[in-house]
Length: 439
Image 1 (tube, helix red, strand yellow):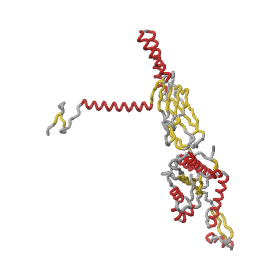
Image 2: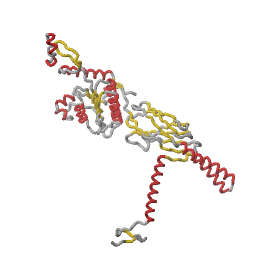
Image 3: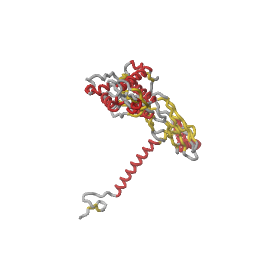
Image 4: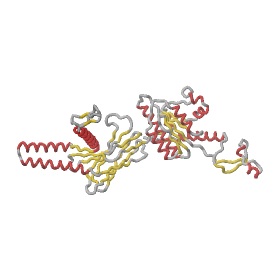
C-alpha cells in the first residue's frame, strides 16, 4: 500500500485526505478557547456587572480634564491632583466588588394569598465572610405574572429593600409589602444585589439566590342567607326522597314497633320473638352532604372588559362556595373546570382539598371553546347519587335543551341527574341575592 504525503512530508494513511498540520490544530484549539471565554464572560456579565453611575461619570470627566490639563501644560501640581482624583475611583472599584462577596439571599413568601390581600415578603441577607461587613446593600426583586405580556416591562414589578449594614458572619432581615390585584401564578426572578459603597461613583450588581413561585388565589366573597336557605331546601328535599325510597343506611342503634309500610327486611326477628310483636331495626341516618362544583369559564373570541369581569366573578363565586363547604366539612368535594387539560380535584372537604382547589382556580383560563357537555359528563360519572351539583357559568344555560345537549336527552339516568343541577349564571343580576363580592 503506497502512502501519500502531505506538503510537510508526513504520510497520510488515507489516499486523497490530507493530514491536518500542527498549525491548523493549534488554530482550532485557539478558536475553541476563544468561544469558551466569550461564553464564560457573557454568563459572568449576566450574573455580575459594574457600571459607572451618573455622579461617577461627572467625576471621571473632571479627573480626565485635570489630567489632560496637566499633560498639556506640563504642570506637576495638576498631575498630583489628577492622581489624587483617580485614587477614590480605584478604591470604589475595589470596594464595590469586595462588599458583595460572600453574600446569600433567602426569600420567604407567604402561602394562601388571595388577590387584593396585603402581601409581605421577607428578604434575609446573610454575610458569610469572617472579617468584612457589607454596607448600603440593595436587594431588588423582579416579579412577573404568567400570561400575555404587554410592553417590554409591563408585567414586571420591581420592589427593593435596603440593608444599611450587615456585619460579618451575621444576617439581617427586611420586608416589603404590596398587593397583587390579579389571581394567577407569579414568578420571582433571581434577586439582584447591588451596592454603591463607599463613594457612590460605581455600582456593582450581582445575581444571588434562587427564583421562586407564588400562586395568588381568587378573591373570596360572602354567601348570603338566601343561598344557604336554598341549599338547605335542596338538601332536605334530597333527604326526604332517600327516606321515601326506603334507603336504610347508617349505624344500628335500636328497634321500634312495626308500622304499616315498613319493609320486611328491617324486621328484627329475634327481638320480635322475644317481645311477641313485630319490631323493626332503626338506623342513624347519615345525610349526604357531598358537593360537586362545575366551573364553566366561557368567553367570546374577542372579549370585552365586561366579559373579563364576568369570568373573574365566576371564579370568585366558585372559590367562595368551595371554601364554605371545606369550612363546614362533613362530606366529599369534587371540582372541575371546562379548561382544556385541567385536572379534576376530589376528596373529603378539608383545608388540604381546599388548597388544591384554590391552586387550580388561580390559574384557570377562560376560552371560547364549548366544553360544557364534557364537563357535565365527567361530573356525573365521578360523583355519587344524591350529591349536590352546582354549575357556575358565565352564560345562560338550559340543561333541558335537547338540541344543545342531545347526549343528556337520550339517557334517562343522565337526564334525571342533570335536572337536579343548580345552574348559577354569574352574568345574571340576581346573583347579588346569593353572593356579595368583597371590595
